[in-house]
Structures are given as structure tokens and as C-alpha cells.
Image (cartoon, rainbow, N blue to C red; front, side, top):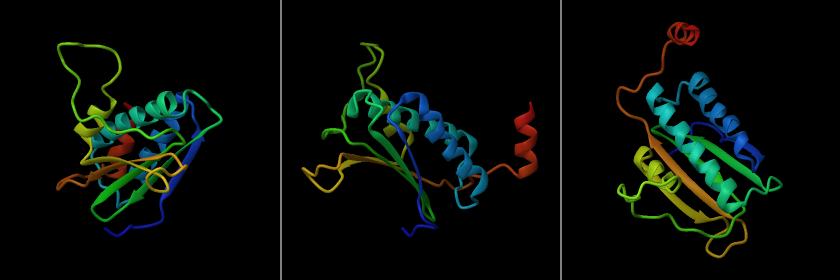
Length: 161
């Protein structure tokens, strides 16, 4: 997979109130980059995945320590969008089982949502196993046939109503 251009990188303090900035970058990529071929529904799905990823970093990796940076890289490829979410937290593994629907509770659904709406979800240590650099969550969404972006006129009309 060859990248279409250099990554777009956003770094914010580890504060869940700033997740909207990360989601706004996704929206700007879709609006202004013809090579990002995502439907409005796909953008909504990926936005929720980003919200979950940011929330997990803030709560679990950084324990609400806003002095630790949260870094998100958007890498545009010919046939997919790759999003890397970097933190400075301790190692973790992705859960494999979906939450039990009989035991409804708040929380614990983030990884399940990510796996449901992304084509690939993986985590690695920055700098390799045991590296001091934190975690890198890799989220991949392949472009679907028929995914289209609204024409500029159509997008403007939809934003007024």
C-alpha cells in the first residue's frame, strides 16, 4: 500500500473534551481530499471509533493526565485510510470477546465497536515489544466500491437544513 501523501498528524493533551478536534480532522480530510473515499455513514462510524479510541487513551493509558500527549496520525493510501492512535501508557492487549449482552453495563464496548466498524484493529508497542514509547493502536478502513463523497453543491445544501 503506498501512501498518497504525508500523514496528517494531530496532537492534543490527553483530555476527552478534545476528541472533537480529532474527529474534525477526519471531517476535513473527507471534505477536502479527493483520495479519501468515505460515505457519510462511514465517516460517522469512524468518528465514533475515534471517540472510543481517544476516550480509552484518556481513561486507561493516561489515567486522565492531561500532561501526556495523545497523537493521532491519518495516513491516506490508495485503497484505505489508516489511523494510528499513539499513547504513553502501559502495554495492553485487545480483548477478543464481545461483551455479554445479558450483562448490560456502561463501558467495555469500545474495542467491540472498533472491530465492528473497522476492517483491521491491532495494537503494538511503540519501539517494539517492551519499548518505553507507549502503544500504537492501528485502525484501518478500506474504501468500499460505490463510496462517494457528496458533490460540493450537495454538501452545502445538506449543511443548511
